Length: 224
Image 1 (cartoon, rainbow, N blue to C red):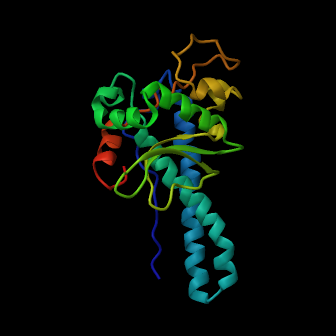
Image 2 (cartoon, rainbow, N blue to C red):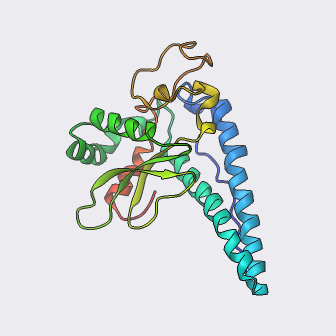
Image 3 (cartoon, rainbow, N blue to C red):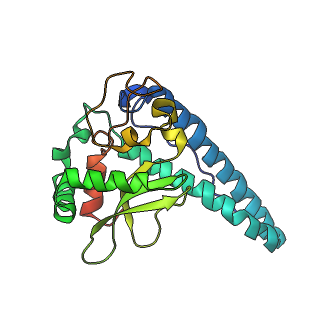
């Protein structure tokens, strides 16, 4: 039985391209260490699962399901997350490049600012580690809504992820320590030294990009 092997996707920008919103140090560790670990562990679990299936070992197959779910979800979530981001000065970081998305957000939440506040509130309400997502529901209405997922659970079912924010500590701790509010609040970037770590915050208004990608997601039924 063949085993599918997954690999770490290359980033479409340099590790330091998102500064000062996200530091190059965080991006390098997040991508090359944390995401790589999910890929490595997923491949190992899949190989073990195939071996167990070949041997008719049902107990081992069942025991491996949580491992595959966790690491497979981590690989899916991070692969989408990297495409959500774009350098601040790039065209993709300008809301004007995704007018269809902004129009849908305005229709649902009243304004882009109102959405940012609602999204930040949902992110801050996550208990422990998880993800916050803007998704498009399946069906004729194709409505937008905010959802959160626990740990590395991916968005599943009939919902299409438009973009998401990683709320695991490895995504922000080196930059804002335990101060989550500046990580998700759409305020102007503060000066260096405003936070205990002496670093910049991740401004949600900067981290909404991959507008070309999310615009395509709204225009079709494919995922980004």
